[in-house]
Image (cartoon, rainbow, N blue to C red; front, side):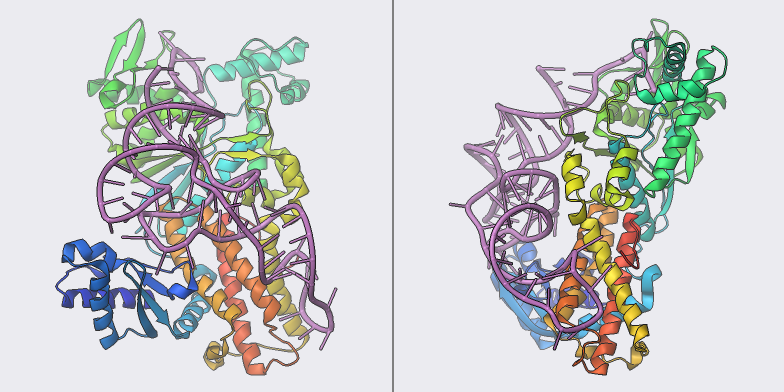
Length: 536
RNA sequence: GCCCUCGUAGCUCAGCGGAUAGAGCACCGGCCUCCGGAGCCGGGUGCGCAGGUUCGAGUCCUGCCGGGGGCGCCA
């Protein structure tokens, strides 16, 4: 059992002795920001004071008293601080235990909390229409979705990632018309796609003067380009789900029929409407236009019916940009109308990524292509930059600034730490230094503040992965990776592993510490989809 | 007009209702006899405004101000 769990149980036992029944799982324990507040800290006395009918500090005193009577493992001091916090100061032994755990469980096992219990979750992200190249924003939310998938998979969910390919309807016609106009050397029609990329495509189009044919040609080429771009920054999908395929398979018609049977549909003005206002939408929505074409919503509902009712995913996470948040209410209403508990649908809205002054729009042709960003900054930097902050935060990207500080980019700081670790390994083998077995190493020699700081940081990774998964917040992993790299650089600077006056026993202990840092860094970089280089 | 979302240091951003609100960048000053200086160390009078809930509010609620987004038989 880990130290954290033992502490929680000791606290629960102490509370029980004071007549307060609280499950150990509900005892709040955290690693304080400040070292002076101990290795672990709990606010139970504050949280339970009201229930106990006592003042927080008084309750803390009583609890501390009983904990001192039978101190949990490693605990050297229990202090009461501030309004009633209980601070635990531990001997370094708990950190050596953490290190053993890290290196024995390794990259595959450490920091793999089982929170999902195998729940099947489908995550949809990017899903950009194949009408133009990907934008920087697509890359932003794509990196988010991809990393979220990796993190949730590590935390015990069974994850399925999808890209919804919107290859049907009016926009395919608009795309075809734009392509044909380009080929004829005429201006692109109103509502068409103005981007230069279409001129290039038009030059290669030798098919007939047929709008749908031309549209299909263009969208296929564009989709191939999209796949190439995504692969460059490590954004993966298990499935590319075609909207045309569900229209052709009859699922859209089936879905509308199902809604009609449930009484949530009516006909008006030659169109078929969903009574979405019954489910919290601001207005009713059209499912089938008077010309007979299904709307985007109808297709999307068929897709979500497939997710929930046919493939039976227990949870669905849709990652949208803020420019699509207007469709959330109708989607949610439609899902509820299908008889699905809307709590099973989670929509993560990413705030828009804007560029210096201009607005991004594929139709107008004014946008910063993701390809351009990757060319300028590199794949890893692009990827990491998009994962440094919460997607709730609108981002303003200044490409020139990002370029000029590219050598100062956080990605180098983190990767450099990994490269230094690899370098230590190379030097060790050059000098014929081999690492002894873990049981033969004396980890208790690791007492330098830098060593202990590094170990404490390592101890946080399981909790960070857990939080990142449950809060759907990959940026927390980024923050941790930067912090760990920071601790490592400090350690590297002050603690030579194979220095001239370093005893060989200490070298051994440090080699294991370095291995622990390597494992932590490798895990976090993998979750972020960033390379962990052996050299820079 | 209505709805959503964001507002924290010069800039980019952290901060599960808890302790003295933190990082990076930029700027200034230090540190190379040994494993990579893309590093390390030091330098900080900031939570948009006003109320409210609470023992305690950057965090929750209301209003206002400001930025972004949305409100189609487009997707």
